[in-house]
Length: 111
Image (cartoon, rainbow, N blue to C red; front, top):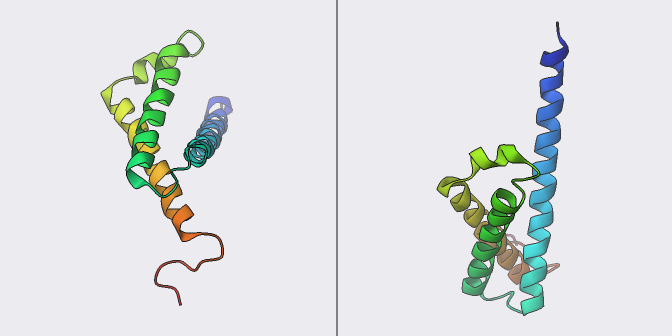
């Protein structure tokens, strides 16, 4: 019976696509918040915004959505919270670094 074996890659593919789309959307939200605060060039502020955003996403995913997706409950914990905070910080720092470079500017070290 190949049914379950063939179904697994489809489930994993949908899960990965969903995860990446939500990550990209989250990156846009962090960028929007930083732009709205007019703090694009301030790395410390960006790191704080990213950390708060990551923690907020964790709280929403693993505390508010538990009634709708009960399997999330077993994934919650300090490790997952720290991962979300690191994602938020990394996203904010990346946005600041890219914004500092500006459009049409060559990357550092490129002549």
